[in-house]
Length: 345
Ligand SMILES: NC(=O)C1=CN([C@@H]2O[C@H](COP(=O)(O)OP(=O)(O)OC[C@H]3O[C@@H](n4cnc5c(N)ncnc54)[C@H](OP(=O)(O)O)[C@@H]3O)[C@@H](O)[C@H]2O)C=CC1
Ligand SMILES: CC(C)=CCC[C@@H](C)[C@H]1CC[C@H]2C3=C(CC[C@]12C)[C@@]1(C)CCC(=O)C[C@@H]1CC3
Image 1 (cartoon, protein in one colour):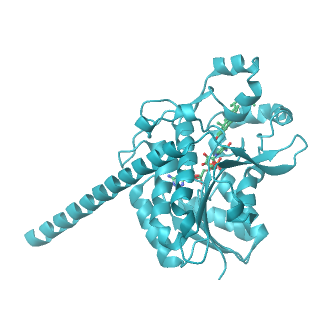
Image 2 (cartoon, rainbow, N blue to C red):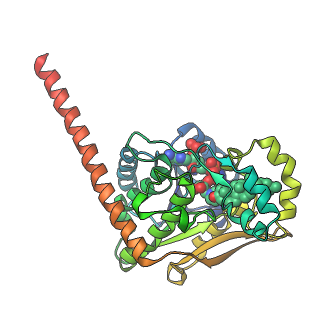
Image 3 (cartoon, rainbow, N blue to C red):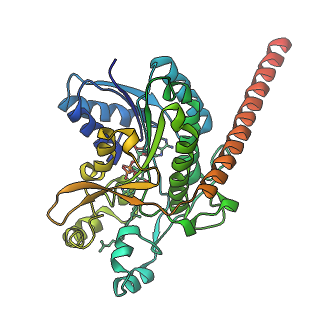
């Protein structure tokens, strides 16, 4: 049977470019585009079918920021497929981003300028909000929903005699100092994005510790700075167009300016081709692009440790348990109310 690959956030940007690259690699793959907006998902499927008319592309409704939707989607996946070879955890948000202009100009004339362009450290803040599950939206979308998805799909990910892969789209913006075990959702800070991406780095390490023996391998990638809906939300598109020549110039000094979704998906694609046993669980695989435009992948060690990753893993398990309990209570109450209505009719 052909490999089954599920990609979250597959309807645009890096996720869609990954699907295109995977189909160029092997058009017989069974691709499942897991998206929250089915209209955009349909459009993505049509675009992929234009270049790969015989491709097997399914759609799956998944709002990764909602635990109920994650459980429902996982149920459907298990009913549809009896194996899952690759699970790309790519959906992500950065709501209400704000650039610190003063810090930008200060950084421009400091020795840290290359690092600033590569990681956006000290430049970027976001305004988060609480979602329907009572969780911080950035944490819920970028990390927790994906964590629950992996856990819920473990019966088809961890099968005897075969290996499966989970790949997180992290970021160079992930930073230890933006994350706290006392505030894993980043309720109190202004860098929920950096915190959620650092948390995904930690969780990938924990998943390897807990699941390698069952044949499940987790990896983390960084796509570099890519022009997508996410980056167009940071600055208006006319501004990006205006500074595009400068961006190509900066690329000579920092190979992290991958710019196109195709180049950004390079590391995701290269992990598809690598043997799981050859992967370094402590490395982040970076999509890079040289000044001349050539696209390559390079592993770089992450600033993570086992104790912290285990502590976060345990916290997420507790949060998952609480979320499941709350949903069960909601369902029970709905059932009881229905029964009451039937009795009073
Ligand atoms: N662009 C960049 O420079 C970088 C991006 N990244 C990461 O790459 C990943 C892909 O982002 P990118 O391609 O840039 O941006 P896009 O905004 O183009 O893609 C994000 C995708 O995630 C989906 N998504 C968002 N929220 C949810 C949700 N609740 N449920 C399901 N899907 C959801 C979006 O769907 P919809 O269309 O419905 O919004 C979209 O398909 C993200 O994780 C991002 O953090 C990391 C480093 C740099
Ligand atoms: C002249 C010029 C290029 C100005 C742009 C300044 C900033 C808007 C960018 C500099 C570094 C960028 C960056 C990101 C967003 C845009 C910048 C802050 C990300 C945070 C986008 C999402 C990520 O996951 C990582 C990126 C790191 C670099």
